[in-house]
Image 1: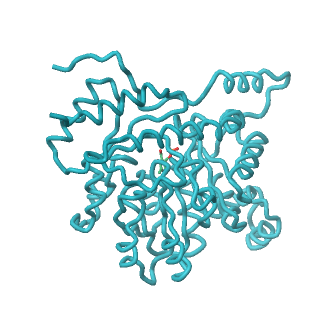
Image 2: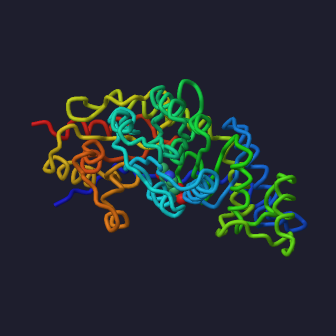
Image 3: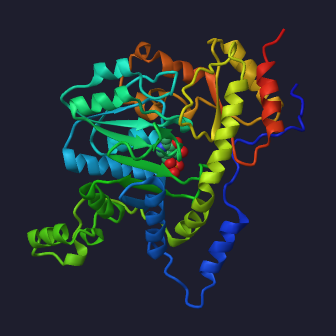
Length: 397
Ligand SMILES: Cc1ncc(COP(=O)(O)O)c(C=O)c1O
């Protein structure tokens, strides 16, 4: 029988405040109804985001998954077919986007320090077919190391960063999302900031940006802002109306102005909120029992939005006991960290590819014996202490 607890720790808390809704209402209450599809507010938010991150170009989309998809498609058009090294601990769209772009995903195990690539495994996977390394910064631990950057440089391989769950994380003081050639962000409910739904592709590469501009909107050339490139394509297609040149087979990934208005309001609080999340996580991980849980994480540059709990001992009995204890204590959780654990175990992947799971011990451990629990700015110390008490005394006696 489970006992009902008065303590409650929901997995996520909506970031959208009355202040954001107020901005939306005043935007909609203008004398002349403003344009509501992708327009000046989206552009304004893109500029603000580029300033916050420190990149030249940002393109707002309707989701982080769209950011992944456009990134892989643009990459495919720029560098051709080949292999993309991906982590198995990520969101489905980081793998699906590779498959959609007719590129080949090659999986590399994770390490248990920053939950990004196991560098020794990664070295064995690089071939002349490798086009890029598509890194995921997992739950706001910075995933970049000097060794990884050296490999990219030495082998001339592009680094793409998925920062969808890591807004504000840093590597040696540089923001995650500014180190690779391209980066992706999500503004989904309860991420560090939210636009209800939304995403961003960010880069300093003009050509990449121009291709993404077209891909965002049905592959249309008129969306490009490089007039020379645009004219060249128009000249190459004299039999077409210049307003309707579809350069690539593409969908519609556009945002609305409403999402951008919320983004412009949210970004004002992002740094302040991130600071609270960082303090919460620091306190949590430093006080978590290192005998029972894997606390040896590289937390420098972290900007966490969900507490990471990894059992040291691979015991199914302990796992089931802990889950039951968390549930009865009113603590919401998700097992497997990002994307529910090992993507290679998912039916969409298993159907087409055979995997030797013995090569992936770390991700398989995380898949079975880890959880994330909500960490948000409004969380008070007393709640974190109650959570710690439950976790730290779970296996006493
Ligand atoms: C690492 C990662 N990439 C991509 C996404 C997809 O973002 P969205 O839900 O905005 O499509 C997520 C979702 O949370 C994610 O965690």
